[in-house]
Length: 230
Image (cartoon, rainbow, N blue to C red):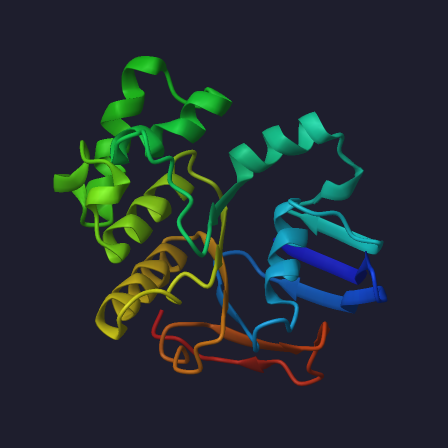
């Protein structure tokens, strides 16, 4: 599903060049739940952005499901991302003037993946799937943090992407809600979706198939597989 070969990402800062990623080699199989673990500033978010095509590598190659994504034009990349990748942002990034259901419908409207008459019905079904169907017609500001995160996950699933990426999806949630979100991702992977999350949480072993530890922009040499309850 995911192949990174010698991927580096450098940024120019007033203090000089900063290397966010350093010669990353990584392969992730389809239908796996993978946790990318590291401290703040370790490179986790940058790695997810590379996989999603949100950012482009300074050097190296990123391929997802056989597509070398950094070779695509911006327009083609945006359309590819809309159809192939669901991204769950750390701070939800729901549009405040739209209801939960309307936020979930946005990716379908953008990519036109479903007929217009089916989009709300699908949005409601996805909200039910993540246990916030009763909040469908409420604005994000009226929802709890856990409910907003569930809406964000439903939005990420709108176009049935084969790949879901989540950046610190439990960072702002209490422990009970965080466990429920991780269990939701586990179920998605069990059904064939590839799920990659960036997290600083250490206690994720019982949910994931594989743990990847990153620090200072480099993956630790030993990548420990986790045998899940799949």
